[in-house]
Length: 304
Length: 193
Image (tube, rainbow over all chains, first blue to last red; front, top):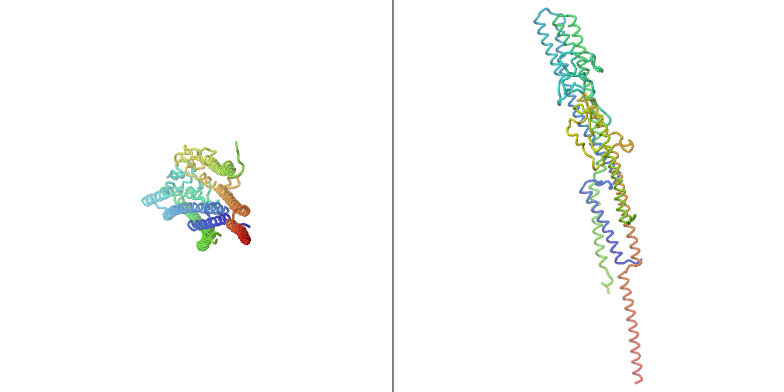
């Protein structure tokens, strides 16, 4: 096999180029800190990285949804607590009147108080959050409750739409409680908490106190107890929903951590390993340059 | 007209006429399906004014290069989030729009937008990686062939110099023979004198 100066020069250039390409690759990995800088670096890992990045972004959106819904539930819970407290006052007042009284002043005072309590109930039923009436179902741009029967949804028919939000992959959570299910439940299509029409009961009570209808007052006091139970059920439902959101949020965080770990394992470079490789490649490259320089200088002419 | 099928020109033409348009077709299919699916779902909903939703993207069958927001869509009140003309606060259509993300809409309803795009990226990556591998194999092969050619037809300076010295020596030897013969002839002639 004849080895010519051309052969040596081509070989040297080829291997010097390969060495430089390896150094260049190492330099890229070290400076970017990423194993995959373009899809062709590792097509299979690219698919995985894109898929995981997408899942992380989706998870962030779920987190945002969960956070907003949590706030909404807290506001709803506060309103329900307010209603519950108000109803308790009404119940106490009714209990104090179950024996009837002929004193007009006492009755007038009771009526005024009951009317104020009913108004409080209506105000809380018409509570707004972010410009939406939280108990208005999907018809939430106008106050859902009015002072007279049928009370719910003014104007228009009552709306019981369940508003939902995505909190996980193909998992939704109802974000609202339609007002008629808690304050005018006997008119609601769906009655998950009870069947008491609290507002109607308060109005009946006001009328019965006015006419000193003892039997009516006794019935009203009993119905208000059922109404309190109804509100308690709604509060429990909100607590259950908050717990569900908490666990969804926790799972979301765990998922994100897992995804980040997988992403890190796939994408992050091992600096220690690269450092060792870089030193090796530098030594090899230096040796290659030095050997090339020495060999190309050699000629028989020098010895003649 | 010359249409090269191989070589650098053939490869460039193939890239221009077949490979890149293939990728473009995939991206266009994605853009077009996103536009039509989102439009269809949006048009099933109702906006804040109770009007039926209008197309979000235009044109309806868009290519990735021309997809754009419908110029008629000028206000957020035109987003058809509600599933009912009378219920402004309803979000069922918005929820359905969001759920399109996880719906199998691409490749004959077998894969999601994201998976389709990820597969496309992966496919391009594989194509490039395979081309790079072919190039590096070819370069090594060419190097091997040129070493073989060089070995049979190349000029080795060492070899030629060695030959040079060999011929020089042989020339010197021949000259020496002639000069010796001449010397001998001189001696012989002097003997006669």
